[in-house]
Length: 493
Image: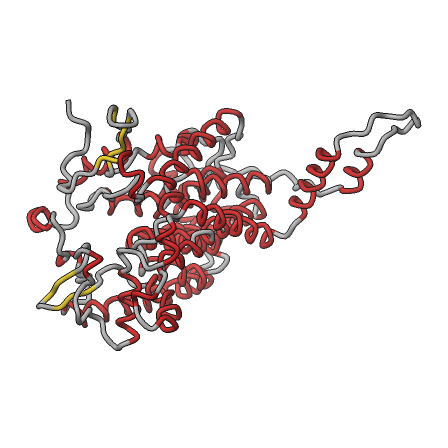
């Protein structure tokens, strides 16, 4: 069923004594030597300490580094007051007052943007878990307008990259990835600053706050799903994930397939398959007989329990608000493009071509004050993060490779058929739902990270740093083309 994956090379252990000796004058023959650079010696000692540090300590370091940069790039008004679109703070404040609706309606500063109106009542329709996280802050603040929601989510923004590093370390420790500790650090930082997550992390408003929380939960889910090591934690992460970003519910194939792999006998998973359908059928029978069904049932039950509880909470909220457990209220959003939703629905084949166009072909426009402009439908994934091109030719493939790709495709499919491209955005922000799985694929693909990758990484960081610095800021709005009708995708002749 799977190709063999290489075992990782033994991790190099720090040798501080060797670094210290190398920095001293003289050699073994006693011949005096010129002193080596103390800076170089300090760098070697630093490398050694990092190589020997606990993974959790490096994850904390990644959190501190990324969070510091995100604070530096965030607009001052995001940090010192509530954001213009503080839907999660409004939702949390309503809960504290025993209400699911907004009795006074949306606040004037929110400009009626993405609120649902049903039978004369106003609601926040977005999945509610980020509001759950805001509950303690809202309780202390006393009212939604006093909650610094933007700052709160910037504080959370470094959690995702830190948890991603721990997941990559687990892949290496289990022999599923050949990456060294330093390479895992690089891949985690590449995600933090070289993907569209960078510009999302510094916005603070409702749409981007959901991505911040969703990425952290996706990374935690990845960590827990590797070899189905932590089924209950994986279920909690996925349950809260679908209460944050609904497409994350479709990440379930990763745990399901990893549980199968961990419960299969080595003989059935690695055994040779005969030619034709008969060979596959014989292999399948051997595979099924070799499964540890008792352990598999236990893993699936532990995984499913928190997910079912989270779904139950969502169904109850939907029933209380909209009279149906399956109605999340998105069809009642008071938005300018309500007409297209009524005609085509929230999901339809009609939207597929435009979403594929944005995700794969959108480039900066030529002209304007600065010589170029960016349509706020967003830039193509390969333009903002060319690192993803390395996914096209992995050096090795295995069962985890296919499990990750199955999850990526299942998560991506709903948003490709969704009525909104992600507007307004710097890059294709819906990719945040599956980006941590793409980084994991880069890790297990074992393709060497050489000069070409370094150049692509430099480009990715430069492009996304520009997006994080300019997007959503009034003083930089001339860099962007905004069309309120959402009908202008490519530059007109």
